[in-house]
Amino acid sequence: MSSSSSVSNENATDTAIKVTVHNRSDSLSFDDIPLLSGEKLHGTAKEVTYLCPHIGPIKGNLTVTNYKLYFKGTEKGHPFILDVPLGVVARIEKVGGVSSRGENSYGIELHCKDMRNLRFAHKQENHSRRNLFEKLQQYAFPLTHKLPLFAFELQEVYAENGWSVYEPVAELKRMGLPTESWIINTRINDNYDICDTYPAVWGVPAMATEDDLRNVAGFRSRGRLPVLSWINPETQASITRCAQPMIGVSGRRCREDERYVQMILDANAQAHKLFILDARPSVNAVANKARGGGYETDDCYPNAELVFLDIHNIHVMRESLRKLKEICFPLIDDARWLSNLESTHWLEHIKCVLAGAVRVVDKVENNRTSVMIHCSDGWDRTAQLTSLSMLMLDSYYRTLKGFEVLIEKEWLSFGHKFAQRIGHGDDRYQDADRSPVFVQFIDCVWQVMNQFPHAFEFNEHLLITILDHLYSNLFGTFFCNSELQRVKEDIKNRTVSIWSFINSHSEDFMNPLYCAAVSSNQVLVPVASLRHLRLWTSYYCRWNPRFRAQEPVGARSKQLLALKAQLQKKVDDLRKELESRGPRVNVPRVSSPVYG
Image 1 (tube, rainbow, N blue to C red):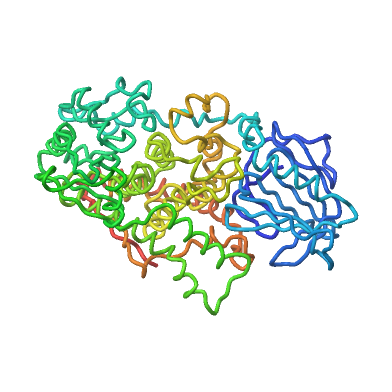
Image 2 (image 1 turned 90 degrees about the horizontal axis):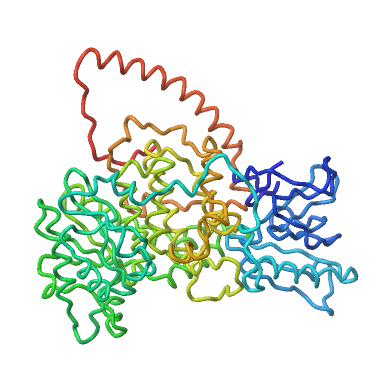
């Protein structure tokens, strides 16, 4: 048996989670509920009707556990099953009251974070709604009710230990550190006292003293001073990330910060200017001065060039996704699809983020210029830009393990506020800090994969699985807002990593079109134009049966992977023969998109 992130015969997705299932008896009967290790039944309602917007009302039984909502149809024929982790629920509402008349007018509606709503009708005479509503509230929002998230209850054991995927010192050494210009500092923030939202290990300029680092941190928002994200070991062109300088309306200066920025420039002997990318619209950056923030000016940073990228803030992105959900669920208006999609501005925002990353790639790869990236606090748009540009520049991050390292490094260790942006386990669905920043990043990765189908070792199924478990609360990977919080909560010892699950079933996430020989060391430069971007319908519209794949994608991928293994052996044999005859032909480093 398997329990899934979201499985039903309404939409048979490929996101099934392979786990050990513990049942109440050795043999499964029709009414048995598949349970994960640590999962317990907490409420059941019979004679409930699921109001499916696509195939109509379905009668069945509804069960609530400390992890999921499980609905099983009782109608004859093939049974309908809806298996939904409660972590995806954003809010729960009662529909109808005592005076409600008409069939299916009295029940419960669940508004979900994964682009769908679920509505269940109850019979008033059964008096089942009240108890089920209370159980749903309790286990969909455990933190609000002072209960643990389910990941702390899960007792599953996997063959791979996902917590060992990312080791910060090893990753910096992979990039060639230490060098004459850059060092690995493991001391100054080992207690997270300089910056409590940064990791304990930093890559910093070798010339910078610890006093310099402390002073610079004091001048940058939230103490988030410029530190190394990526460096080209050949050209020494680097990508650093930070938060805005605290200049304010008075035009405050910090000599240590100005010298430190110069050190980053001097670390790259081939460049005469440092390229500073401010992800914000310029109007927003100027407005931040009134709150004590600001941006680098020519007077203070004469050897730097500042460019604003016009990427909007978290509130704009949240509203854009809300509009996108409205046009994708429950029904799609084909006649007005394009105009409705345009009105959400979702693809425009995706384009802006991708265009910013492409700009970083151009400066680092073609101009051999170092780039420093920030937004306001450096944990949302900054993470999008650094991780996407690194994905395009470094083929390692396009492997399965490398992509896991990229997320661990640029998103988790550098303090993207997953707990606040996602709202794990709490019922504050109107919280202004909620925003789909990480969803946008994964969407951008999918866009690049579309343009370079042979460049990624992993497939679309991996991206959807990551987003499903961003919400599910099954794994502890995306809990908390910073590395410090995860250390305090002992997340690594008390929960399972999503990478444990993924790496234990890696064959399910492999791209059969991946060509390592061609893609290795290639720089990807996608076209960031609305003419080439598409809505990710297999994620945003997947609950609509019209968008269901006509054949199981997973089965076809495995067939292709087996065929690829046979062909790869032939290629290896031919390559050995070719190398014995003469010198190898160099493959161009920069790659352009492939269109079918």
